Length: 173
Image (cartoon, rainbow, N blue to C red; front, side, top):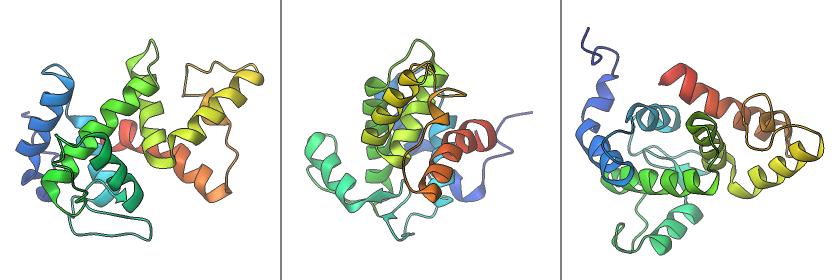
């Protein structure tokens, strides 16, 4: 089978752009599927959608979109435009690249899980939770069954954040 038969119809219009961004920022060998799975989780491929907190394909908050424009002025042309699909897909790739570097571990899947959790819940929380995990004897370089067990936020935020990497990596991807 071709592998294309499970792609949601709404995703097809963004396929080439997403592939281009991932290949440019991550290289030719990195799979595009986790990025597509993340967009599917975030917005269901609806570019104009806004939740209580965020907007666009990649569901950037206003603050994160502005931070992205400041951090990557050349790549994002110095503007925050989360409702622009091209901007959102490029910003997602850039942000995930930055988070992958921030939470680099010896295992690419653990790194990806940390990066996804940080994308969803903020890097500051993940850093604190790694410290908590280490203090309790868990491995701070492993997300699954280690750091993911430690969360000091509102219960709804913990539930959502802990489900996020698993949904993307084990359900949608």
